[in-house]
Length: 107
Image (cartoon, rainbow, N blue to C red; front, side):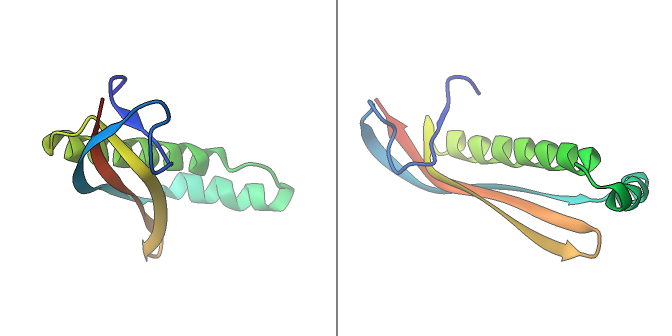
């Protein structure tokens, strides 16, 4: 992944976009863990970060991003610009993390 560039800008500063490959995306759907729900309920009483959910979100973000990069590489790109993340509830207790952008070839 280190030779691949992701940018939330429409360009990559200092590099030239020489080809646009198209929209690429990656997603994952994750369900909450019952143990995490119990701990989250207790944490709501005293306040503070819900670390179990923070870890779950970070894992989901990494997985969805890796899937987007795989999609981009499959199209012959070496970068993705205008990267955006989105989340949505799928069912009670399960959420989707979706990442998308434009696959490009940069010099």
